[in-house]
Length: 269
Image 1 (cartoon, helix red, strand yellow):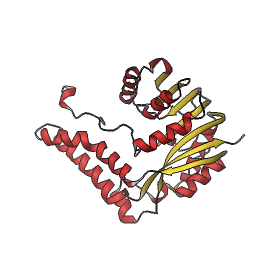
Image 2 (tube, rainbow, N blue to C red):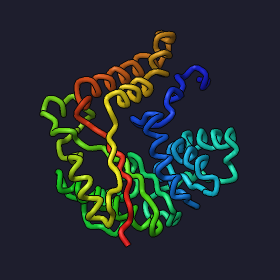
Image 3 (cartoon, rainbow, N blue to C red):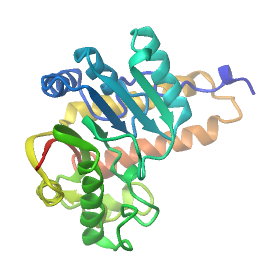
């Protein structure tokens, strides 16, 4: 089966998350204002935010780490198009115990789990726990790993999911398989985990409803258009089922319940 027969992947998204152009510009300006020389992006995907930061900080070099080769290839193509390839590396490898630090700016947006081992803790941590206590432990472990990856006086941008309110059993049942109330923290708990891990919180922003709508729509748009014109394709039925399940999970489950916070963190010296 030729690749041209398959739906394109995430071409409608600039960022792999609920992040508006306005918020991205504000975050980049805040981080670039410190004139970083090095940038490390954990779970970078195609590294759009890192590339924008490198454009805004012309003296900086960046390293992006991810396990998705397709996303990394997209990042390299984008870097070539912007004349940034000599200043950035996209590496297909695990971020757990990464040697690619410390950096002046560390980006970790929706990728804290990439710093943890299979049991949900950093390599030096103990066994994972169940429930909210385990989630707090894992979040704190990820933040401690980030603390070791940032230079004194640097900044960490930590993007983390949180419950805007505790979901009902009905909402949990409509989310992804196995969704649990203890799977995410409340925003106050995330901020407290950051201070426990050795940071002060410079700024907190949370994705708005329109950012979530733009992201969820863009996430499915390529496949929706493909389904509208490939109804007889051998993969159409399974693809339609997957897309409809994802949309229902959002609209009936985590819409207005799951949030994403962007915390700008200062390491304590």
